[in-house]
Each structure stands twice: as structure tokens, then as C-alpha cells.
Image (cartoon, rainbow, N blue to C red; front, side):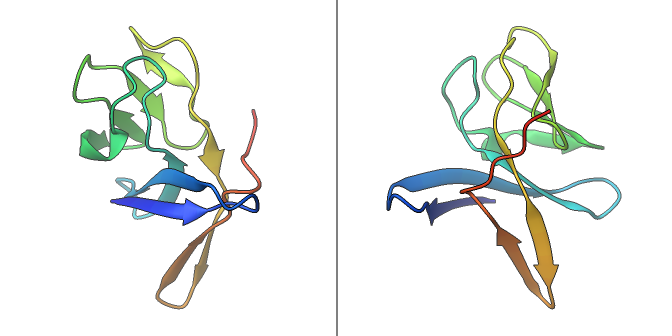
Length: 96
């Protein structure tokens, strides 16, 4: 699912919020680091999301590419579950 969240600076941040094969939620930049297209349109398998345009795959937990042609990671954001709400902190990207 694609959502746009406002950061502290007021700029909209496109975020892909996805559920992995084990039911966990993850949030990462919606923009592929290789093709600059939406990752929320890609397929999720296990803990990987695949870019629909060129087939790059990214680890949902780290944002690191695991399949070429992408070589740069995408930002990942902390997720907190609060009841039925999925909360994403776009002002604190996680780095690995």
C-alpha cells in the first residue's frame, strides 16, 4: 500500500507499507533506487519486495538490494503497531 506521510520539514514522503509472509509490517521508501518507480506496485514474497519494472528486489527489513540491477538500498522506516493502526516514523529512517 502506498501512503504519503509528512516529515518534520512538511515535505511529503512516499512510503510503501507492506505485510511480509509472516504477517509482519514493514515501511520503506516507495521509490526504487534503480528505476525511480513505485515499489508498492511490486510483488512481496517472504521478506522481499520486487520492483515491477526491472526486477530489482529489496529486503523489507534493511532496504538492501538482493537482486540486480539495483545496487543502492532504499530507506526503511520504523513501524509500530498500536491496536489496529500501523504507525510509521518517516523522520527516523533506519540504517544498517
